[in-house]
Amino acid sequence: MKQRSWSRRRFTGTALLAAGPLVVPGRVLGLDGGVAPSERIVVAGLGIGSRGRQVMRDFLRQPDVQVVEICDVQESRRSYAKAEVDGHYGNRDCRVTRDFYETLERPGVDAVLVATGDRWHALASALAAHAGLDVYCEKPCAMTIGEARAMARVFEARGRVFQAGTQRRSVENFQYAADLARSGRLGQLKTLHASILEPSVEEWDPGVEDEPDPSVVDWDRWLGPSPWVPYHSSYLTQWNRHPLFAAAFGIPDWGVHTLDLCQWAADADDTAPVEFEPGDEGSIMGKYANGLRVVLRRGGFANEGDWLGLGTCPVRFEGDEGWVEAGDSGRMEASSESLLEGFAGGSLRGTDASAHVRDFLDAVRHRGRTRCDAEITRRGHNACQAAAIAWRLGRRVVYDPENESFPEDAEAEAMRERALREPWAYPGE
Image (tube, rainbow, N blue to C red; front, side, top):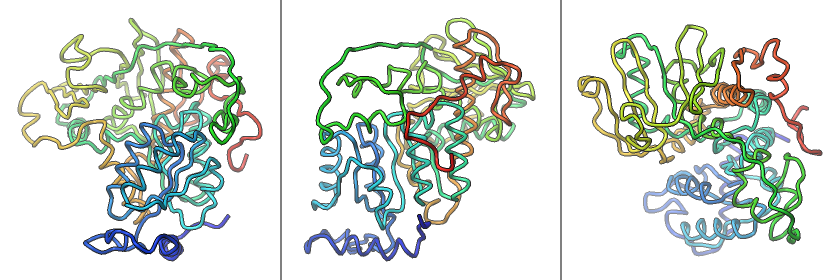
């Protein structure tokens, strides 16, 4: 398939809109201060449930975006998302499909928002990049170390833009905290703290129900690369409890929110800790090659035991001259008031993806790097996977960040990959 280009997009984007109704809002035509159709980034959504609709709204709010299609294997989710897109534009033009290959092959689409369940994130993103599309993918972006590597390689080979949905990198209080750590104002960094959920493994068998018509729920496509299990409707809403479908265990799914920020604060986006070991009360201790420690654990930090002291997803960066904490509330705490004198306050909470979406769109337009591109995502996500492997094995593991492997550790090595259900495969494999 040919690579899409900006010039091709400018032509086909206009053609797509020209095929619509005769009466459209002025902003759609580029009037009233809007952006002309020929200058818009044309976006489709893949797997748009509740979180997907939240992020999609951030795309819809951007004046240089046109959302044109929703792909989802569940009819109810297709309908909800289409209604929201059509309501925003004041028309009924948003296409729907349950076959994402139709979306990937659709002329004029520039980028996709991948907000499926975890089991599909890496493969759907890789297939989109192979088709010449740029990708914004919700987190966690991969189920295993092998998946993150395979996905990143496709983006490198195809030269496409990728943004992981680690939106806290675009939120002011987290940015300020990371800048304090990276600038040396905390002194030499000693320990980083990342909050996680309590690690757990929960496998369950809800039983079997009659499989619905594929037009209502396409069960085979819902499962995708995951192992086959008989249909039950509870999987559709509780898939994140099952390790077949989710990067679960309270570590990869939550660590990609917070260990990602520690990687950033430590200037370690091109590496990862070299060892992990389970600690007390579900904690996991990691150590970088330079001796810097990272602790993944439940609970608050400055306000010990107050998990929500600064909001969800708190992080703490400690140096030999001070410390700082930030959380989803938008607030911060620090060892001295002077460290926060340059922080004027933030307009975004940690769950707000609007600035992160804008960063992605700017990279699409100018063919630049995003704040969390495929390579950064690969390193940070795989650090979370290595921590999860240590916890599941109940012992220390030595991790090689360069090769993303566990030297001379057959048990850990066996957990780096999972087989994809046929016929699914990564491009080039």
